[in-house]
Amino acid sequence: MSPNKSISPDDEGDVGRRIYRLIVELYPICRSITGDGYRQTMRLLQSRVPLQIHEVPTGTPLFDWTAPREWNIRDAFVKNARGEKIIDFQDSNLHVVSYSVPVRAVVPLAELKKHLFTMPEHPDWIPYRTSYYREDWGFCLSHRCYEALKEGDYEVVIDSTLGPGSLTYGELYLPGEREDEILISAHSCHPSLANDNLSGIGLAVELARHLSSVPRRYSYRFLFIPGTIGAIGWLCLNESSVPRIKGGLVITGVGDRGAVTYKRSRRGNTGIDRAAALVLQQSGQPYRLLDFHPYGYDERQFCSPGFNLPVGRFSRTPYGEYPEYHTSADDLGFVGPDALGDSFAKIRRILDVMEHDRTYVNQSPKGEPQLGKRGLYSSPGPRELALLWVLNLSDGGNRLLDIAERSGVDFSDIKEAADVLLRAGLLAECEPSGPLAARK
Ligand code: ZN
Figure: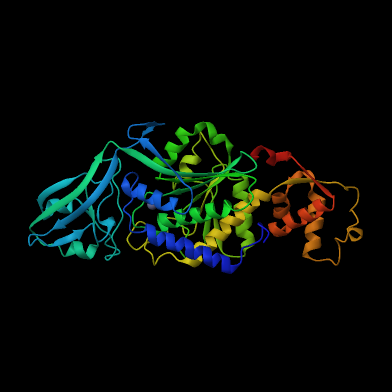
């Protein structure tokens, strides 16, 4: 199978099911931006791909930030006066506000309520809360459970530790023909939430497995980092290699049933932005393109003005636009193998465009070359049209992506036409010139 061709629905189904199985394995682990749950997650990924696990000591300066103290939790609960556990971390790791400081206390209901978080509009769901950079403790619970709380004293236990340790992240580098890199980043710091962010982790792992088995023009770097601090930390510790990044995707929220949404990089018109737009447009399926805005996931860091990298974000329904976001309803039923497989296939096509987006020069530019005598022209049809477009626009100033955009012909047909013409000696590859050269 030619690498630029669409993968068949069967392949998509297999990949989607493999991603889903990994999500199921990762789901129960209590992750946060640091700690053993994060390490356990990275080790589980290592059973699929040869990930390197890095540890950044607490207190390490990371631009305007500092590697935080490490948080670990063994248990947590709230007991009523009868000794019944009414909130139990063992039932759901979402019950404890992430980074809660250790607590052992007996408190009256009014005091307890200051530390409880619910979602009245969805009374059976548990919200997901964090308190990374403000020392506090808290519990999240269903509003129904909250409403049933009676006056009285409650025993509160959070058996956690917060102290010196390290910030853990995973990294996988796949060398290609060139040192130029494509960055794939998935935040990996959320506990039992399936779409945000386990779907992104699972998809990135399958993508790494796929890319490691095919020829690569670009080198690929996969980051499995805690949100915000992980991206800032990686950029700070690897600043010298950042200029090699020629394109990238932040991958998150790729398992829900909504349409694909691509958020453009800050520059807005880089190769990856155009490749994503082209693939989504040519898919014939609903999609949305969003302009960059300085809120969201780690594209905020990669597109900060000091880096301004050509990194966009690939999601399905954007965070905040689905009520299950950051709640216990973002569970294993909220994501599905079909959507995961479809997201994988589209990302793979975007990367195929990046891989095969080359610039050629027509070697017989005076009049059309006679295709018939070379056996390249039978009857007018899509293939012939692709040949004519590639021949006409291959003047050294247009890349294949330009030709696909302008012609409306599927990129894989444009690429195939270029291959045919190259073999016939009618094209020669050249270094790109013109407005796109800068993005090389
Ligand atoms: Zn999130």
